[in-house]
Image 1 (cartoon, protein in one colour):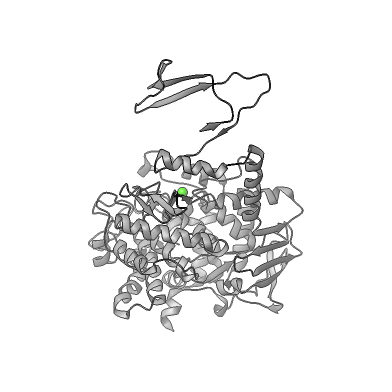
Image 2 (spheres, protein in one colour):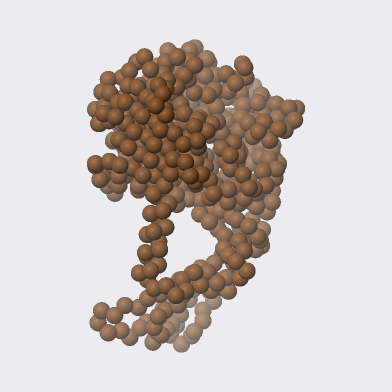
Length: 557
Ligand code: CA
């Protein structure tokens, strides 16, 4: 810390005891107190820098502020945020809508955080939370992939690919320094949540065209993580991988908690690895095991309930299965929330449920069933449960992440207007520009990025595929300025609170019937014109050829 005026008083604090006679304190809880003689209204300015590496590095970091006063630093900060937030230009008459949008955009960009610094030669270096060394290259922290693989990373890959490249390099370094990719960095491997969704974060970036880092090391990393578990941190790698690889699911009766959630996410992660392997032209015999395992979600389908459930090692389903029970076989949600975690193959899930009609009925039931719950697994009502209860959207629990793609699934089964109806209700009722403008866990930007994507009119249901599935546009006019210099212009004619349904759609002036747009379409620069209506257009988007990606369909080809 450097002050623009010398201080007149100092003392140190050791474990809460003030010592006026010392200049230095060493303790597990140490502090310092300084004081200034000032005239009335006088301001003292302090410049502060920190470092994970050393005091000397902190002094280097402080040089960033050399020659700038407080107002200049504040101005630079405003300009930088304007540049970053200005990549998306929203036009709307309602200032509160813009406040909500830009607040969500801001929050989408706070995580992950850079854990790197610039050394005296101006080179990027980082303190490794994994081995304690100071090493070259990027490192990032403070993101839980269980939350953020869903749409936060796809958002960064679309709008901020230069930053994505650095984040991927940080993952390479994490693997080299610890033998695993992180699932929850804060910083270092943290035992938290389930899944092996680092595979999705790696695959989505590469498949969306991000380059400039060591993808071959990341290929090794995702393979290693899929077939090992971290010796100390059980949520890193795959807990239960041996059973999963042998039986096709993690059994619910072998002492591994939340086994169904793990299985469903491992299956999607396997699909991610398969797609990455294909893109890297890996030999068929090396990657086909992942294609096979990607279908493992089917092993948990409990036909009598048309839902996913925990399954025992002997093949029988869990006893006293209760779709309303949070936790148990699932993670911070129940079977009604988790059954849909088949991001890569909604068509396969539709077939399991007996066709579109049954599938739509099961989707409807999530909203229609009252917000009843069984909280016995948590020995009390966790905040995620309480949020579902008071939001009054039935069993739809938008305040936590597992269900956040669900509304978009009507696009795979011939009732896209229900997607449009529910998206608009969630946006209108569960987000606002007020201090209570969130309905639950923000979680490293995931719940914000959901709003940002949804307000554009599309959402990446299956990260790693090149598709964004249609919802309904929120603003009359939006322009995305992409880093490649192209722009995406989205307009919604006759849009209003009542006119929430897509009546028709044009892409670059041509009539467009698909329920999705592709990454390549967006990157190429595109004009999307929606025409909105207060009544659903039940003849739009109901042909199977217009439905979004499903792995089952890819395998048939
Ligand atoms: Ca959460």
